[in-house]
Length: 492
Image 1: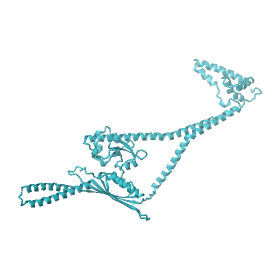
Image 2: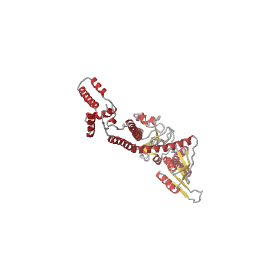
Image 3: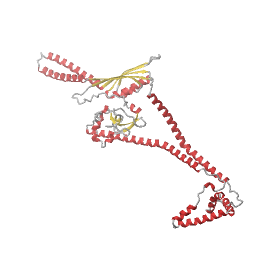
Image 4: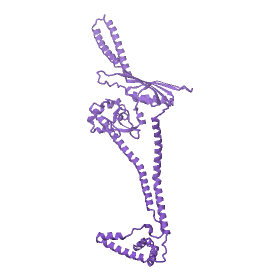
């Protein structure tokens, strides 16, 4: 019976006319010698007729009866002696190949989708900043060109913003706002800002007002400018605009903070910076004074070639008080800041006394002139002496007012440059050291994993295709090498 089972699929293919000429010849030779196979072929043709009639509308139970008679045979038993096909092993390898390819594609595509979402959030945040800047311009149109107060700007702008979500960055929503206003421009007139295209009004900020570089992998910050445009700035560009996190905001001469008299504030600043190239640093420092509208009072450079005795430079100059923060930050960007000091002085009383003295001297001068015109000639010399003394007091008061105004309008900066760059050694111990080591190892493993995934994306499909092709080629070759066994007598 085993020999008949080996021929059944070949006979079935013969009945369905699916075999080639060689297989057909071999089957016909076998049928001429085997009565059981001839009987099985006749039964098969009969069943096929019943199956055809079933498709034309006969009851479905006939089809079930026919299908129960069909014996399940392996695809490898078409020719006697053929080796069985390792179907399970091949399907498992194909499954692993598909899973591997899907994993590689996911590893490649997920970062792309993540970057797409990050760019969308950056665009949303930039749009928020743009709308806030335009709302501030609308506020300025209603308040005689003045910007809102830097400490209460969120409340002042509530009527000009249609949606409070505009004040929230998609990456870091905070209360009351994810943005901050530059305090330097608090209640300033837009027309008084020197360069509106470079004057930042609104920027991404932390709750304490410090800049928040939350975009572009920690190197991007969205900022709105006084001319109405908004853009993302890198840390380098932020510092170039004089907006570093160490910026100072000195009191401005046109602010009185609700007091009856105008405040008169004077500032002196001193900074010591250690630099690597002192000559180039001196040139950059002098250029900074001039670019910010100031001037140099003293600039000296002393070079020392003796080891241990660094070269030094001293620069003293004056800059407009609103530009003091920009100059200090620009000088600090030249190297390592070893010393930084800003001293402010309230000169309101001196200015008030001098202004009052001018008014009194002018009134006294007018009175003396009236008295001199009405006095007899004998008393005129005495009145002239008093008038000359009053004129002297008036000149002194005017000089004092000019001196106060000069000190208020121009701030003095003393910069010391030393050709020595410290190399501080930062040591991490305990948990900090462990965390630093973990970050380094994770970075290396991450780079290795990325490379493996990238190489696998190209080579894994190729390797899988070669393995499948070779496996199928081996099966075909094995099938072609087999021949039907010679039957000399009836196996029954």
